[in-house]
Length: 419
Image (cartoon, rainbow, N blue to C red; front, side):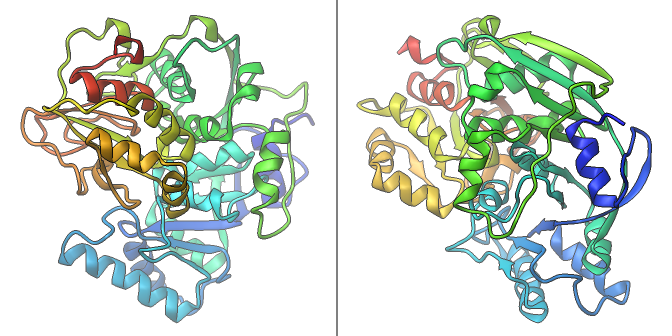
C-alpha cells in the first residue's frame, strides 16, 4: 500500500505494515517534551496515576523557557518542580538557565530530535521538528504524563494536505512569508487535524532555518503536524548533532492526499499578518501607515542565527526609531554566542536594541516586553491573537525579521527598501 511520509512514520511507530487516515493507533514515542508551563501538570498527573519511574530517562525532555529567567515567585516554583523531578528521575535532558534555549530551537540544535522520530510535546509548536522529517505534534499535559509512564501515545492517523511551492523568491521574502501566505490562503482552521506536507523546488532551496519556521507555524493553520521530507541539507544539519541513529522516510510517488495545493512563489511578496489572526495577511507595501511601539525579533519561529543575521543587515549603521522599543531574543545560548562572535550583538546594541537571554518572553505575554493598552508591536513570533503579548487592547502584527527590523527603524510597518 502506498503511503506518504507521515503515514510511514506512524506505521513504523505502531508496528504495522501500513496505516490510513482515520485509523486509531498507539505509537511508541521517541521524545516527550514539556516546559515550565506544562510540565508541572504532567508531573502532578504522573504521580496521581502511580508513576514511580519514567519509561526512559533519555527520552523525556524538560525545558524551562516560557517564564525564564523566572519573572516572579510562581514561575520560580514551577521550575523548581521540573528541577526536582529531573533530579529524582535522573532525566538526561533538563536544561537549566544558562544552558537552556527556546525549546523548539534547542532540541534540533542539540540533536535530540531526529528524522523519522515520533515526538510529542506539551506545547503546540512542537510541530517545528517536522522540518527534520519527523512526525511531531503538540499534546496535552495529561498525554505527556501517560507517555512518561508507558512510552506510548495514541493518535488518529491524520489525512495529509500536500503543498507544492515552486518559483523564485522575491526580494526580502523568507520562509515566514511562505507560511503566512499558506495560512492566509486556507485560514487558521484550513488544515484542522491534517498533516501539512511541504514540498516543491522552493522548499528544497530553503535553509533549514526557514524550514523550521514554516513547520513551526503549521499549527497556525490548524495542522496536526507539518513535515518536510529529509534531503542532503537535512542530513548535513543532523549528522554533526545526532545523539542516536535515525531513519529517513519519504512519500511514495503514488501516495494519496486529501488535496494538493500549488503556489507560485514569484507572486508572493513580504507579508504582515494583521491582528487578531495569523491568517489576516496583507502585503507589507499595502499595510498603510501603521505606527508601532515595539518590535520583537526572535522566538521559536524566527530566533535562529540566520534570522539575527538578516535583522543585523538592516540595523547596521542605523538607529531604532525614538518611539520604538526593540527587543532581540536569540533562541538559544549557542545562537547568542555565535551572534556575539559575528558582531551582530554589537550592531543591535549600537542601533538601540535591547538583547535578551533566550526566553519565550513576550511571545505569550509572559515577560520582558509586555504591551500596555493601545500599544502595537510588530513581531517575528507566531501568534497575534487578542491580548497575546499583553493588554487585550494592544495589537500584534506578524512579519519576517527584515520587515520587523525595518519597521523598528521607521517607526511604522515598513519594507527594508523603504529605508
